[in-house]
Image (cartoon, rainbow, N blue to C red; front, side, top):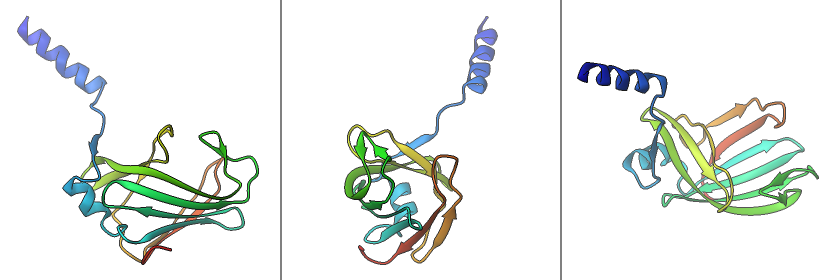
Length: 145
């Protein structure tokens, strides 16, 4: 009977693997992984569509400034056309060496988690976009801009 219970427990674990670990921004893992962002600016652009400037702070907060040309884009029920500023929080999920950066822009926002390789100042990269989001170019630049 005990063997059957152990076998059922093992099979249940295989069928429903544990969710990814969460690392608070204050954790040593998150501080090390994200250190290039602190005091600097992540700029995202989709030429002629939008531009954002994101400041991720070591205390787990973030500030996002954006300009958007699209009249029908809504974030948490707020139209985003024009210039906006949002405050939120960040943390990591996953495992050391393979993290996702999770951001929540505002108290009622849904978290957005995306793969996040460890970056260094001066890095640039592209995201191909999707059916309902344009391709973006990212840059991690020195200082707050």
